Image 1 (cartoon, rainbow, N blue to C red):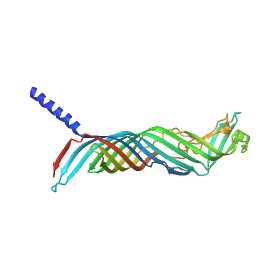
Image 2: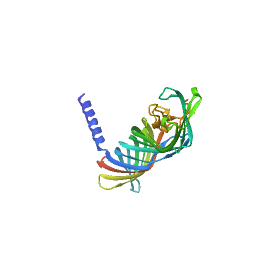
Image 3: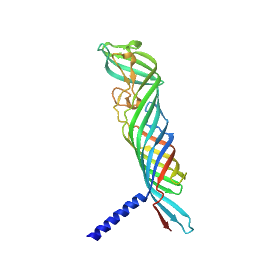
Image 4: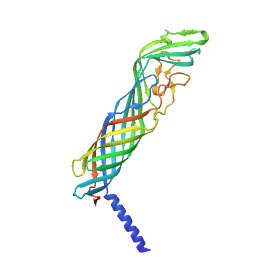
Length: 303
């Protein structure tokens, strides 16, 4: 029993020694590029915006050196990369001249009416921030490396804002067969330079993540990585409740507001929306400064 126990202890000690003999890297990184919110806008056009990816990382390596018959040495490293960072994604939506309908509203006197709103010159900016957690496999030969895996994004902030839109409201009082079109004090007529802003309700998303580039050794334990990255969203990140586009307040009808196109129906029948699902994409250049520890743990293999 004692010899068997001694062998187990020796194997365990050897495994622990090998584990801590491998190469580890701790890094800080920053990247920037085209990082849009991606969605189809049914009654207008959507354009992407610039964003970024910033954070800290950890990489575990299994290091090998391959010596060829000509004594040329290939340095190979296999590993896993993770970390935590901030991802910034933006978009801008421009609507065509469209009309929305809200039915069976009540004014401050309790009278029933339908609200028709014509929208002109409407543009909306959306800005979001996510906490990104990558889990990626890495392969490197000499200075060249590639990484691939997934990223999970947890929403930290989502805002929308619109400026200088012209909204024209008409109140159709069906019970009285009467339409009100010029009573601005009651919220009817043309309102120019209308501004709105608010929060976007977003959920956790998953992205396919790829990166490739080169590194340069600055010192024995310090490396600089430079590469290109591509992230592509795999699921719908919008988790909010769909609402009517115009927020009508019977107590203060002149100061009505609008919701984001990401969260709005185009009609009160809730049959159509401005957008479908929302996901993210990011393409850019990234720099990473890495501290490597230790330099040992190298296995030499001759071909």
